[in-house]
Figure 1 (cartoon, rainbow over the protein chains, first blue to last red):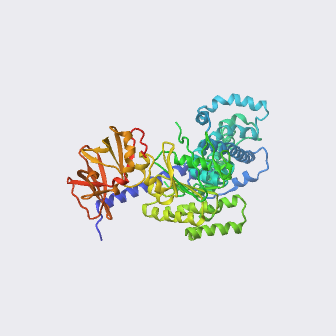
Figure 2: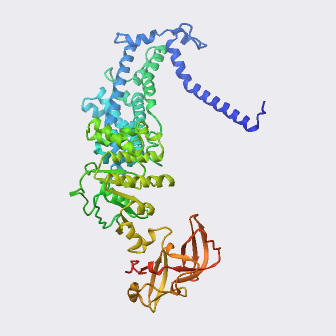
Figure 3: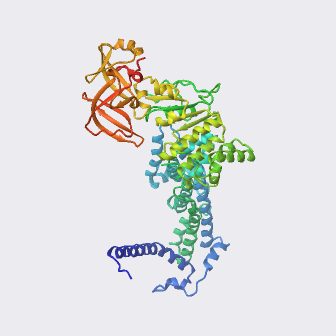
Length: 290
Length: 345
């Protein structure tokens, strides 16, 4: 049996320490969510007991069933389901619009040489400097004027205004990272500029697209302030507003809130799981020397 | 300040024209203008009888091989080579035939299913060549395709490309900074510097009759020696020695009587040790000896501070600091005007 030399011991300690830190961090991050899931399936009484019981004796998914199937329009469960659907539409619409507008814009900014290109790029960044508070009143007035207040489309337009620059910013970086020679080769092989964009530019920036989609969906999904002010009825109320409204009503239904919270977090998480395998690092590496 | 300034060149069918010169001389820019990847501010480019200044790269009937290979990373080698043909809607069988033919010629049939990141540099370069081959274009444009390969591979690929050119009877414009590639591969060389073509001629002519000091010093390795001499009494005086040129040159010297002139002599035209007539010898001290195996380069320092490199047989082994007499083959020297750097006929 060989004696453990000093460096080996140090290495083991570092390893253990690293894993410990990782586990603790994971626990710290996942614990609230875990509690959320547990609360959603625990009976009412368990949630109000003191001291709290960590593990329910009779878990039931009845709340989920209620939210997903209730036909009582006045119930908070229905409100919640409706809000879930609204948020989905808004996130989808926003992402779609932002991609359609932002990705070609990013490509143009990355590839074309034109006057004012630098300034334009910086303008996109500058829009983030404006806080929502500064814009909310004019936005409210504008949307009211064109009759889009409290509507899905209205919110999609407003959200796109801050998601599109984000898309442009990220995708511009990915397009710029594609070696120019590859696109030049495509142009010589027979691609017009548009064909080069679709056949070479887009496929090679797929990791960027996947990342952008995830973040765009998250941005739209999590947004609270604009949704709160610009919606009033179930027509367009989003999930973030609906959850906030759960508290401050006549009674606080922790169980329902927890269920709502789990359901609200599922779509982005599922999307991230689906898209994560497209975020392949170094896709273009190896095709071009150096 | 222009990258390319007043470049005019005529390239015949089946020519292998090499644009060679130091970095920044404008050779790549010129090639890219032919390809349509750079805008032309003034002048015209004709491919065949067609003026192509405003024609898109894809419609110029050209194929290009890049220094960095520029393969499509998201496609395998087969798809890389088939890409251009599929874009033009060539039938599947024809595409397959052409791709397999080219792959066979280049020896990469086994690699057709692999992706660029899975193959080596040399294989990538062949794939890039294959991509150009299947196009059967009017002109092949190659932008330093061998610069990123290791020395051994480069020598091999040089021969293969030259062989391909012969077999396909293709027209090739080849850009390189390596004068060895230029000399061995092209049937015409255009030596460029600072955006201008200094001389365009077959390799032999460039080597034997360089038009100016830049071309003379750029082509040939080790580079040509330049000695500043004074013309006095029809003779060249350098470092206390007197050199006589051949009778045909005597007349040209007349214009430089009493003035300075530059004598250019290649290392292989200098022999170390004895030999040479009385007016074809200089003497100096050995400053450096380079053993190359097959031959030896001897650097000789003259008393006036100038240097000469002589190519000697492998057995020659002078020692550092030794005095050494070297004989110059005066029949093969070149004369240059010091002010214009042009060759004096």
